[in-house]
Length: 459
Image: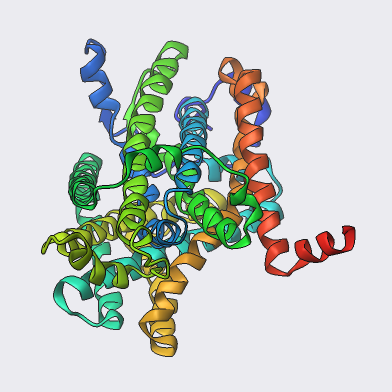
């Protein structure tokens, strides 16, 4: 086997079983050259792109449902959850980039090479569930936007979203940079729309800033905790961990210690800057909901369509609702493309199954579209809104199964060599994993009433 092709080191040969014979996302692997003599800013621009593809998953329609509900019910309180979730995301995505750059493996391939076949299959199934939940949110979000803008019934809008897979196929054939450019354009569109919405809503800056300070009430209030974990699931996406570890390998950097070190630095800057933009978008959604609905006593607003209908009358700006729907459509379409890429990476990495990209993406879309159509037909459009929030909680439940292997691999000196995590990075990473797992366990206990039973017993 050609170890140089896989971007491995002698340490890797001893630490991995070497079952991943093909590079991750082979059609785009090392397809973007990085010239050696570029200055800092031009080199940062050359490395920039993967971070923004990852960031779109942090501002998908699932975020809208949870952020709107959180802002309407609890004001600015859950801004602290968005901030903490974003800091967690920055750390975890940096580890993903390092794993991909140093080992030449994405996270799915690394799991397949490290764990037994049975464990790998279980992890793959859990990851597929997370991708389906994410894709479901994107399909429903895009369909809702089409209804709001063009009066297309949701059940038809869900079907229309299936054709966006053709755009992904066309752009990827043109080159990976075309996908990155379109994604950045749509992100800027979302940002411009919500900047205007914040200006229109006139939030109370004192209350807004105080919302970034965590409070014990978030954990003690089951309803608030449910939304908080939904925000966590919508912010730190499991499939983004697999995606990022793959797409950083689209850059053709030097295959030595200095080259990898430089690639890690610029990839981390790229993802951190992109995720700070995602923090603005997520925070803006919640702030607009808090300033528009919570302040005026409309705490029951939990649905995107309700928010759309109420924004213009409450803010006194006729096109506020149109900007809201336009940003939602851009968000749904953006997230769709990265979700289909993640689906391809996960299946190929865990199972070493090489389907044609168009077939894999079509399967991913159908898995999301079928439940959305069934839910819309059985429960109406209100049911699809509830499905949005539930999908984000499902995403959060899968996080631990992706985060724990990621931290294990990047802290192993046999696998990572000189690039293994330092003790303080490990401390932060395991603390992050612990917070995610503990909150998820508490949510499950609350769902079954176990927490309340224990408290009553103690008293």
